[in-house]
Image (cartoon, rainbow, N blue to C red; front, side):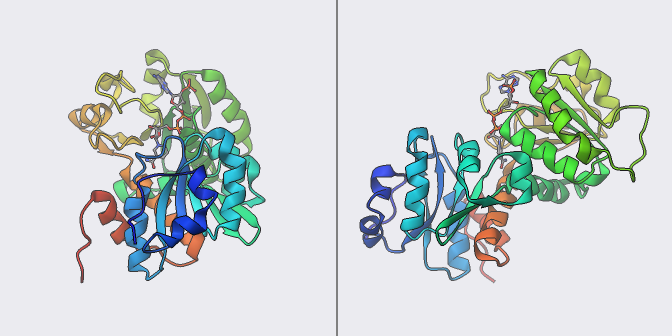
Length: 316
Ligand code: NAP
């Protein structure tokens, strides 16, 4: 019996019974993306499956955009329990599923799919995963925070913004290079943010601003949590997400980027006395919530955390 390959393709999926016949455990869960080789999801889900005594494994599926429709159809006939979805398929899968959760509908993107007979049910665990990570890292809930999201026009930024609005956070400042995308999101979220329980302060509770130093500077005294939802920070040559001088010691800074583990934003914010965290917690909790969506049981979170960290869980 062979170990699972690092990455499977549509050609493998077309003959999944033959693939599974060669594996020690049948592959019934996967992350589906393009590219997908870098995904850390198998690293947390396979130890979780083992710890839960579920006899199957989780693999990577490299699916090109023009293969997506066929791939989703093959999942149903190949014994899959579900999949996670990553770049660039979160929007395409949103269009293709038969039903979805409220949070996925509001975000307009699906990152988790459960196969239910002949139907695909979509969910989005990025948003509640972020909420849980913020609580764990900073012992604060989104509902009590004034939040600035940089990169609000992207998929992860929109997920974060929808979650903040659904949680009726104190204030929401949406920052984006292409400011029109942030403005469109303000229009979408207006209803959710007009909560009669929350008092209107001197500043608007929901605003969109361009990714410009002066515009961000004006908002800094009226936000608590700053979230980087851009991909800036993954490369050493990347620019600053926000000028370091604008960060104050009372700020909480959450960088969705987790590779490198300590980004330039985190280093700069720490130097200013702010509390910081990287995106690994969000990755962990979105995975744990996907596990719970598939199996309707509590995820072995500590096993998953240890898997992500690349160490063996301490056996009690
Ligand atoms: P995306 O849809 O491509 O969105 C990228 C966002 O970043 C857009 O708002 C874009 O602005 C902005 N942006 C990109 N390059 C920029 C630059 N050079 N200067 C200014 N703004 C720039 O990507 P995504 O899927 O949302 O992912 C965003 C980041 O979140 C990635 O680093 C991803 O790895 C991370 N992420 C982490 C987790 C986790 O679990 N930790 C989960 C999901 C995503 P425009 O609209 O102007 O183009």
